[in-house]
Image: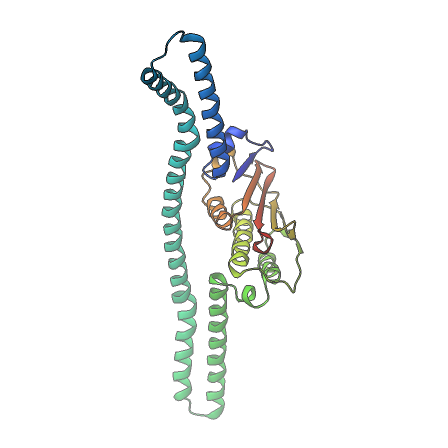
Length: 302
């Protein structure tokens, strides 16, 4: 994961310190440091130790010097990233459990307040139908019961779309993204410029489609609720063996020190990295935020 603060890229050392740095990169750097330090030690032995050398004393001195010189590099390149990874994952799990409980509470309220009211109204109306004295009165009350049932059905569909969008399973990623953008437009939200460059006949793996859908949904929701954006751009295209997703807004942006603390970005990062993807975030306060995600496509992996 690479955060770009105010348009500047972090240094190579900053990238290596990140928990998401590639293991082979860190391994290669450690090997290079070990080789370099060992060469320095052997050159120092040749210059400082004259005459007959004692093998045991030389081995002990070599080991001590190498360990002492290598310890700081191992601390910053291996130990610190592991500590940071463990801490961030623990915090993320806590927040995920909290979000799960909040989601369950929201669903319970929706079922009780909305769907429960519609079902109660329908039951009361049906009871009134049984007690009707004329056919016309029964028909009127039955019509009211049907309206309550239709309203309850709409509420069930609304709740189910929030849990698992059926359009994603039935029609694919493109139509599902179009649907959520239409829903945000319909609520009087910001203007959304949507560009989807995908083959409608091609379907991606279900897990990948779900991850991309949730990344777009979370990013757009954050831009609407927290960034006060007036315009949001969403671009999705498949190119060079990967699925590229770009979401940008003209909102108030995120302060650099809050990028690592953002729960929304942490969830987005986890979804992307679970598919071996890469996340780039560029946020400038009072200018806007750009989220760029790269998902490798399985069919193009060796």
